[in-house]
Length: 277
Image (cartoon, rainbow, N blue to C red; front, side, top):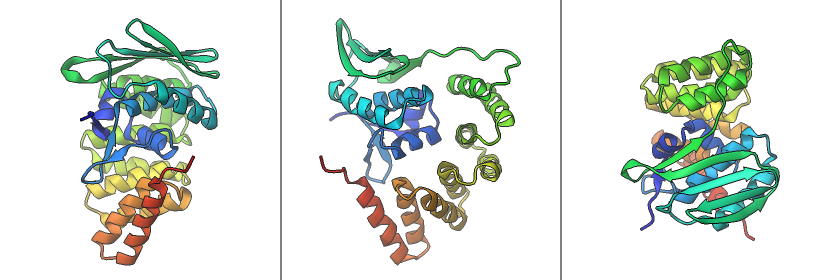
């Protein structure tokens, strides 16, 4: 049976926040399966495609070109991580894939990434991304944001400080709020995450992922009615956000709103269907 990975495992392996992963899934860059309890389950190919998609987004490649590149790249990937490791490099107009001594072209386009996927201890997948350190005294919020991404896996306190620098410099930019909120939730600081998301929505009221992540945090605080309001707000902004429909359906069902639950479950299933070729 092919191994799959949980959302928490993906976060640990890739150093990406839950919010970033949810955005990549929402954009259609990957289509993970669902486990028995409705949880997302990612394949090894999804791991590689998520990191690739995030790197291309950071390089400001148009979404349509990213989707085209990922489709072609997926066709060249093995179903599991080879023992020899896997290296994907995109420079200039080509994506190249290297497995051991084998080296082949996977795609073309102006792709600006360079990372490695290699076997790690206890059968995990390690993804290494080359980033430049943020300069002391930098006033560039993106530098602080990238620094925080790099630090999440090894120094949570420093990552939090870097995200807060980015937020102070660019309070209208949603990404640092999203990532910091997940860091706070993963550290058990749910109430702080809720306050952070609420502050973020003052600056970015039309950011669907902020509503979604706030709803998840409110569920963790056992506040289903408030959580449901933010899932509904997320859906109003992003009607094709499948996971928001799924979670809204669960809460409607929990609160005894059978008709509304059915409607959201139906929309979730419709959105999960793959488009015909």
